[in-house]
Amino acid sequence: ALVAATTQDPTWPQMATMAAGGYRTTTRLASQSPLMNRDICLTNRQALLTWLDRFQGELGRFRESLSRGGEGLEAFFSRSRQAREAWLKEKGLG
Image (cartoon, rainbow, N blue to C red; front, side):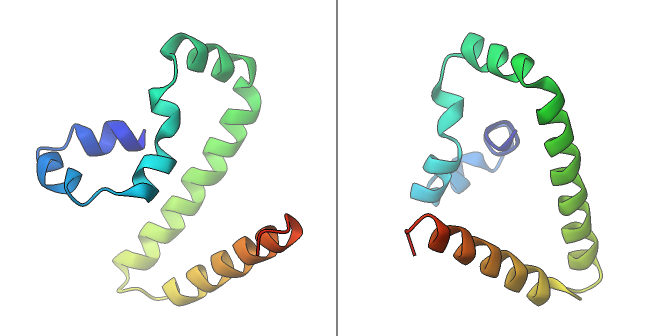
């Protein structure tokens, strides 16, 4: 979805010059076999639908906060940072 949203935008040629390692890492699955990706998604359909709904909800809350002038964004980023740091520590990566 990220690759589709970015590369289909008319400003992609300009954005592409700024896309770096983070974009490359985040979008790496788009380089895999479309047939294999389809089969993986269908095999895990229910779990993916559940997580897509949750992700969509978080994006909606983020969008709402941003549209209200950023109210709550610092708390959002703080919670996200703490959660990621805890995950990295559990994995022995942080």
